[in-house]
Length: 168
Image 1 (tube, one colour):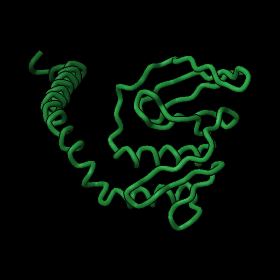
Image 2 (tube, one colour):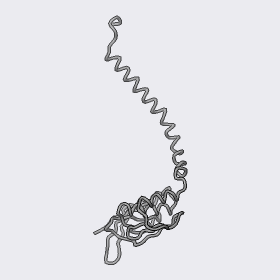
Image 3 (cartoon, helix red, strand yellow):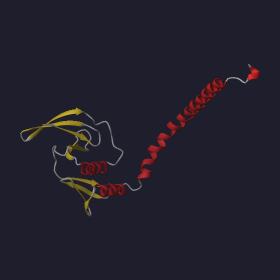
Image 4 (cartoon, one colour):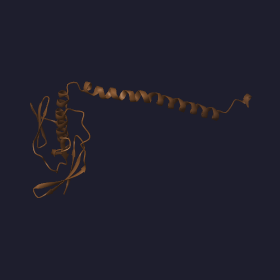
């Protein structure tokens, strides 16, 4: 029986097959090109939270980008995992999340990590501003399309109504 594990960061996909006490690893998707927007510690911590929330196992660390490989619940297990974040260490032991103040639910851990980012809206602002010129270019195109569609519809409506009697 083999297990497919996937990197939370770069989406590298590997197929792990047990052979005795070791694992044979076959790389299905190389990955490594994608980089997450979070700080590396926060991205790894989010992978811990996702594993706990979705019932996944942490299979190991991705060779391509250094983030965590997540696999199915009955798949390979890397054992307890600890990740340093700006607010402290987040640990996962047998699917149970532990922060500096004790055991956390997945929702509480997500809220705790959002607090670690400081002001998340400010962190996302450059990305939102980068999309603005794209929409400003598309706006006149969309407006022109709507005006052209209105012209065609009004022209077709005039044909259907026909001309008044004195003009015929």
